[in-house]
Length: 395
Image (cartoon, rainbow, N blue to C red; front, side, top):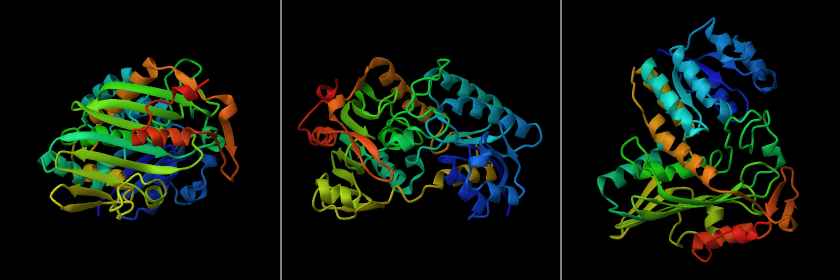
């Protein structure tokens, strides 16, 4: 079987997941021909990489000076995405880049220009467009099965502490670098970005994302960081109300949970503990961890687990190279740019509030975290429709 000669740019952090799969080559389709990272020696798999005689380079230029690659898989910090993508395209590689597309909306046009000039593709690694559960749901939405969307709401509260914000080279939780380059690392643009983008993706056309309107946001930080770790965002899609709530600074955890209401039914998703502990979903929702559609006519559609196919995005790119496909694929630049535009809008139009200092507590654990006392309950109240704002919790 022919294999794709691929490089991995960034072999730490989330890149470890890609590295493990590319080393194991479970589908017999990937030939890892280069590992690129200036801090490669910190990678726990570096001995295995070298034992397999895979070249290790500190940067992309040094690799491309000696080799070529069919596919560049990029898993570097947000602020490097644009330059890494353009570098790979310039050297004739197709690209799969981890989400988000880039930090600064002004960079989107540069990426599109480089892509079009190269004739190569650029896929962006938001998880949901590559999930069979979500793509099946989108197909039913596009077919008209559900009718008009009435409202969408999503919540995720997954605490992250100093261990999270202290990782890497110091970009986590940053607004900008010392020289002014945008980073915009936040709860909405990193860990929970997949779920915000899911809403845009589901309401867009085939392999496209809908652009939200009437975007408002409250941005809050509990942790000692530059940017926000909590967001209360409202917007409209196709003229209908939508809500996205997310935090890395609550006392307790709620895995991503959603309720999408349509003219002909409603679609739910949640994990078992979330459903049982918080009654966020109806009592007859029993397929915990699965996306389920409940039609008004009594039909029940189980779409599957949207979290179970984490490497679909990798193999979507690999298969596209093997089959000589071009184009935007499941999630190309134009679709992913919607998220970039929204993040830039809320960052530029809203102040970042600081949680009341006397209400900041610390949860003791191996991976402990700071949390805002009362924030967990407030976000639930907003989700339930019993509150609207977090502003009064700020200093």
